[in-house]
Image (tube, rainbow, N blue to C red; front, top):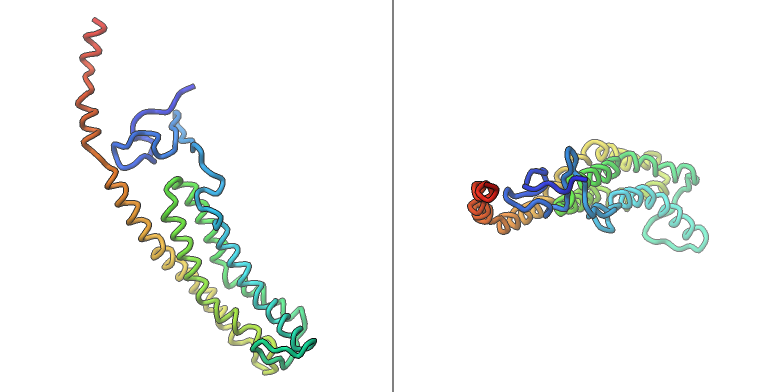
Length: 224
């Protein structure tokens, strides 16, 4: 069985001159096999963050609406919303799929982050930072949805809910743009730091000295 190949030719060892194997990969003929790659791909316990935020944004508004209605009708307790009309559980919970649809970039972010981390492991620092930046950027526009949806669902106005619907329509179109911007802003510092660390660790004279020590004619003289 062939062992790891020598030399920085696996496509993962960088900068040039790095001893092969430092990247955590072994090179066998025609394949690159990850060595010791963790199940979370280095993304840590928050690798499911996009899905968690997506589920929270989709479920909290209808559940909060039900809670407000229950506290008001059962105990007369108001938590900042005026209960004028109850539209029924089905109408209340029906807003959840609409919110989930408008926030479709969140599951896409999870898939892309995981696939990119699998490709770039063990250098997942910029990916992790980009994922956090993208989640934060896409979560900010959902703050009005979380806060205003219960009030519109419990309002007796004939046009109640139109504001939330229009806002979700804008999210459906522009949320991916915010996600890309958040990814860029989040990953940029990590990319700069990683590049600086590689430049500091890169010692090209070591490769030059190693090349100077290579004397193939010496081996030839020994065999003669």
